[in-house]
Image (cartoon, rainbow, N blue to C red):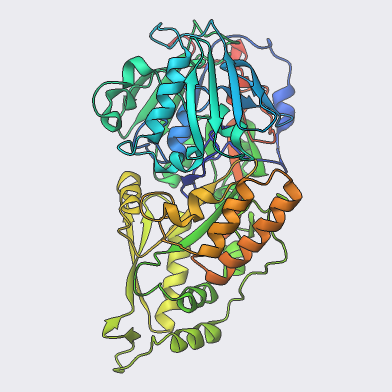
Length: 548
C-alpha cells in the first residue's frame, strides 16, 4: 500500500494484509521514545528493507492500478507537479514552482522548475507533461482508471519549455489536485512503440530523489538515492522492497532482522509482537487510513443481478463477529463508499444486520429456491454455485471467505474459494471474469466516486462489478461540479443511500494500519497521510548496509 501516495485515484490493495504507510489520524506508537534517543543526528547512509506483500504488474505509473507500484514509485522515483504537505495537507509546488487558476476555474497554468532532469540526464520540460496527458487519454493505453478523471479537460498545451496550461470544459472541484497530481513519464523514453509494453515499465526513469536499480521478479525491487536530485536529498541511501506474499513468512523475516518495515496482521499486532525481544528491536504504529474493504458481487452474473440476492448475502455475513474475532477490533464496520472519518461519510446509514432468516426470505422472494430437493438453491435451471476470487497471500481475506462459505452452505448456496497470484487476480478483474471478490480501496483526502461507481466505467474501468444506476450517475456528475463542500456532501449522502439500497458491494471495514518499524530509524512520525520514509534517517552507529 502506498506511502504518502499523491495520485488520488482509488487504488486496489489486499485487504488487511500489506503494510499501508499512507493513512491518517489516530497514531499509536508503543516505543516512540526510542526514536528520540541521543544519536549522531541525521547523516546520509543506511538502507530501509521494506516488506512488499504483492509484486506490481508494472512500474509504469500511468498503466499501473495497484498499491505496490505506488509504494515503490510515488514520491520516490516519479514526481508530480504538486504535492500535499505532510502536516497541513495543503497543496504545495513540487515539479512546478507555482500555478495560476482562472477566475472561472477552467484554466490551470503551471510554471515548471527549470533545473529538473530525468534520471538519465535529459531535462524535464512541459513536453513531458503534455505527452503524459495525451498518453492517459489515448484509448489504446491501459489507463481507463485515470482517464475517468481527465475526461473534462479540453486541452493541455505547452507554453514554451517551462509552462503548461490545462483547460477544462466545465469546473471540477478536484481539478487542481488532478492536474497537479497527474503521473508524468519521460516523453523521450515512452513515445515509441506500444506504450503498454514499454520496457521502462520494468525499469522506471523518473525525476525523484531515488533512482531505480533493479527488479528481481518474485524477490525484490531496489532503488538508490539520486545524488543529482534537484531538491533536498533524503538521508537513506537505498530502499529495498522485499516481495513476500505470505504474511507469516514476512513476520519471521522481520523478527530475525531482515526486514525494517512491515505491516502486521491483527494477531501479530495483538499477540505475537508483544515479546520483550520484539519490543527491544521494533516500534509499532497503529492508525486509521482512508480505506474500506468490501466483497464485490458481479452484477452481470445471474446469481447477483437481483439486489435482493445481494442484500441477502450481506445479511449472511456476521461482520461484528469478524471484526471482533478475526480483526481483533482493529477497524470499524462501514456502510458506504467514503472514508469513515471524513465529512462525506453518511453515519446515518446503518449496517444491515446479520440475519440468516431475512436472507433466506429474500432469496426465496428472488426465486432462488431448492426446487428439486438436492439441498442447493436454483433458479431457471441454474444452480446457485459460484466462485469467490481471492488474491493469494491474504490470510485475513481467506478467513472471511471461509466464514461466508459456512453461512452460505447453511442456506443452500455453494461457494468455491479460488486463490490466484496478484497479477492474475487483477487481470480477471479487468476482464470481468469473476463471480465475487474481496478487496479494499485506498482513497485520497477527498474522494470522487466516479472512478468506481459511474456506469461509464463498468466495461473497462474500475467499476468491475458492473454497477449501473442513472440516479447515481446524475448525483456523481453534479457533485463533480459543486465547489461548496457542504452541498457536495448532501449529494454524496443521497448517492450513498442508493449504493446502500442496491448493495453492489457488501461493505466490510475501515481497517487500521498496524505497522512495525525497526527502532534503528529516527524521525519516524505518523502524519495525516501516514508514514513518510523520505524524512527518516539512521544514525551512523546503527547503519547496517551503508557500505554495501
